[in-house]
Image (cartoon, rainbow, N blue to C red; front, side, top):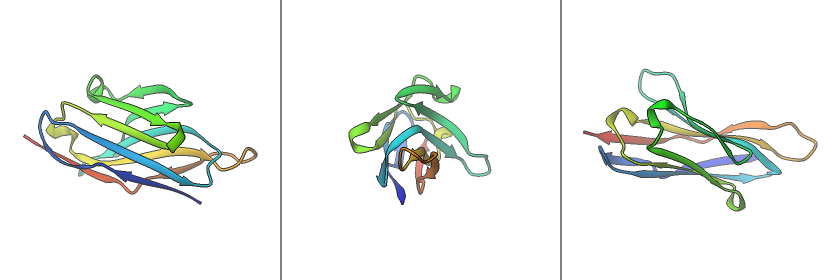
Length: 121
């Protein structure tokens, strides 16, 4: 079994910073794709940033230059550094990983429990 545990959400004023973490535990052979998503009230879940095999795949246009995604392979942990936060960044943030549990298996997709980020003006 694999579990993703998120931490680091909270409330900040506009212009502030937060750092989200997502730690994977359990039977892990490799993590192929990592990503952060967010869902604001009344809106669909959207991709914020993604990594594939260590290389940055993409950032949402709305966060480019403000957010940075990174990973620590030794800890099976992914981070999202969020700077210059805006009220429109308010949402529940979810981490997502595609994890292979053994060399002969196909990757499965896992989600974190979600963490609330609230930015006040």
